[in-house]
Image (tube, rainbow, N blue to C red):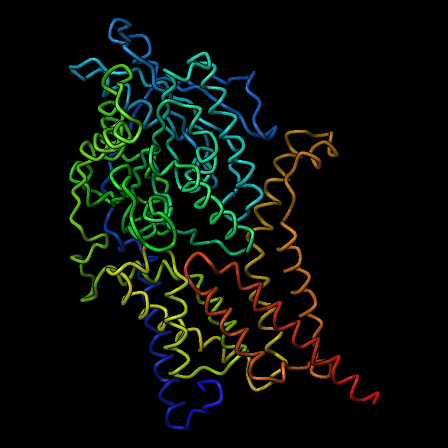
Length: 560
């Protein structure tokens, strides 16, 4: 009905006005977000340490460019009181996109200092760090899967180095920064039963959804991690603490993005399971022991956050292995970390007390969360001319397809409004791109598909270059060791994009039926949900399929 109902000139003018206002509002919001004034001044103190890194040459990870290092602070390593070592806990640091193993030094030194200042006997925290050669993993699923495989091998290696493969004493903490948390969850979902106790501390990690999941392979990989995490029982016995940076973090600014709800739920029905106490999420500036916002990289050196996190890890392992059930032990670990950070569960997962220029600060967070959704909305406009009715329908479909936290009662209305604003604002660039020539719609689809694939290709090129440089002059060995550029699905997407580039006004055939455009529009609305933008390849492929069928039908009619 909405597709067949044309807007009157007055309603079209009204919608164009609304779309221009929405576009200008989002543009102004981004202009402010990108200024140094957004999020306040840098309030983090610098961490200081005396780092010592030792390569573990016998440990072979999933790639020749990956490596495992042991970290010690030279000031505290020589003053360790062996009489106070009642147990050992291994802490493995996993860096994020573009990060490196040296980022472990702040939390590692803070832990050594906290243990030295503790008046009670506690476990000795021994730090290791994985090195990923600064790969841009979050854009490419093949690289992410390989990093997860390296983390699995690293965990098994440190288990052998520290515990002699004895399950009874094997306790491990994995600290994941940004995309490193994905690799940690990927690995632990498969091997958490090989350890007596596993705890995950995710810093500035978008656990609820990947904001730059621009390819279908990346979208599918993250959904697979969530499915395996729940199916393996990790939600019941693995402690999980997630800390978002706050307003200064332009990548993972909101608590919604760092939410752990999808990792502790029974399924997609939204019900919480009995292990809710094994996980929590918080913003750094809302933690009483931290009290400052951190930018994305600063989350690994901010002294306030590192000291509080280190104190939590020391308090979480005060003595030898207890006989408590795994779920109770995980609850105790998470509670100790939460208490040290100053976490207070207010019952409201979205901060709503900060106002900027008379606007709720949450509005600026939503703008950042849905930056990529505009790409899918433009694809929707290429199928059907926008209207108010379609905007409302788009908002409801997008919300229904959103991550669990955005479908929660506290975010549902906000999500519907944000989806409508994205739909309306994206109509402005869509009108400019489409113009009056309908053959351009396929070119617009091609441009959106190409933009979605470019970051993944860049990430693979950077990874392949690192392999070549490490193996030079054995270039063929480097080529064999490099991950595949993309999955078959994404390769098909690139082929579809290439075909669209060849469309001309003479060769263009539009899908002739309303049902064809309706299907493509609905699929684009689903892809506009946060974390699902990579699914835009589906409506683009649908457009090609129906157009090809229409062209074949026209040729058949001419022959007859």
